[in-house]
Length: 474
Image 1 (cartoon, rainbow, N blue to C red):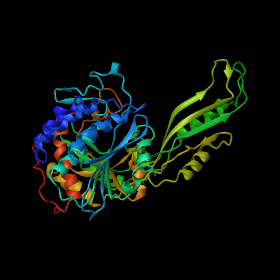
Image 2: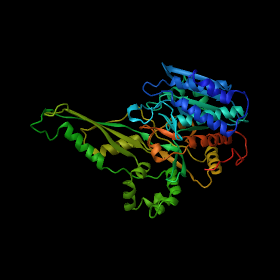
Image 3: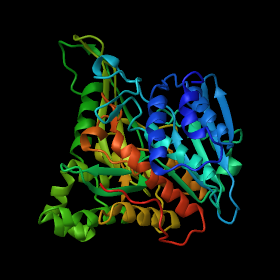
Image 4: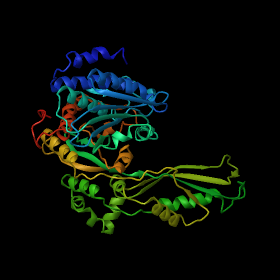
């Protein structure tokens, strides 16, 4: 990247210590994002060192201390530190550098072009999560340039392998990483925020992810007597598996309304019609009605937030049409709500299948789902800043059906939130991990100041509600 950065960096760094206005940082954000999207950090193999060197050059030119930990060839984490007074515990700005694979033949623009056309920026990682990484980067740069009176250290953490096995975050939190510094943090901001635009281009709400479900992937295994396909075996391995899977498919897991989920639905009540509005205002009471519970259970999006889910995703058996196989297995994508006991769920599934010949194999490594309370200085700072920039747009709590690195930090006593001010349409969100991943240039520009205001408000001694960057017209 050293061949492409000098001219770009000159835009910001030509006069060390100078202050730039919002528009300058917005332009820089767009340019940096384009460059970052051109760096192929597809995992496998990862090559996150390329991203780490990109961040390193920007940060070091600002005089911000940077460390890179290359824990495997081409695989690296980066930690940058902007020291504060230490009056309050640190704030971690966490992002991952790796991206999922992309098939160029299916894209309108090359996935690693960083192309900018008609107000849209294209590239693998635009949604997940290179754009947010740039917002975090510029918050660090701007805090240094403006000489913020920080009461807490700002830690910029860029990790590898989030999309596969969290190897980067596990390394960072391990004895050979930076655990002694990271575990002192009070707050962490990372991916997971959900901010949807309506068909008029206006934000419906800002969703801050306070918790997430836990992947508890199971394997069902059966054995039986193999034989010739012309003479059926009623109790064959595959027949046993099919019966077990049918029972799993028909099983209805119980509904439960967690506090953050209840708040989310209460905040949605004003924008939905009856009778849902009434249900959403008091969901714990509403689901006591069997008809309401069944309606919500059958609503795919709602149901995923209210219960442990099971999806049958992989079935393996046989190798030839006229041979009855002696073994069969299936894989289940199970997602548990925060606070759920995996052993209790296993017992529930054994009872549902009701066949001792079907073995249920749990994952070798399970990370318990968890959540952070919204009752914190950081959450309140997010609410205040968004109220200034987007008056009247509600800020609510959301729970992710997937998993992020936050699950590793919360057990350390760190309040971890999925937050971003980036606004996207449902169609754009669907491109994350899909074809034609992209983000609107306008929301990248506007989000620079919003994100910085959140960092400034929670990291300095500025009075609550003090004016921040000037809100701009939507």
